[in-house]
Image (cartoon, rainbow, N blue to C red; front, side, top):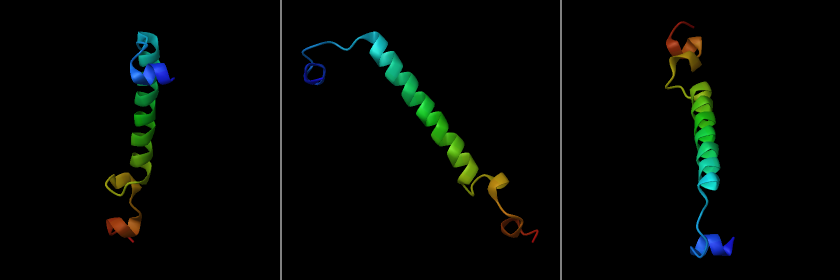
Length: 53
């Protein structure tokens, strides 16, 4: 690991591809969670918050 971090050994494209796919999947999961919990999305508002209650 130290050799990779120091730049003594190059990163393999496959490793970078797997890391980027994992980061994209994590970002997608975070966006989905935000949609479920954020009041900025009207579907998450209660009737009282909308003014129907």
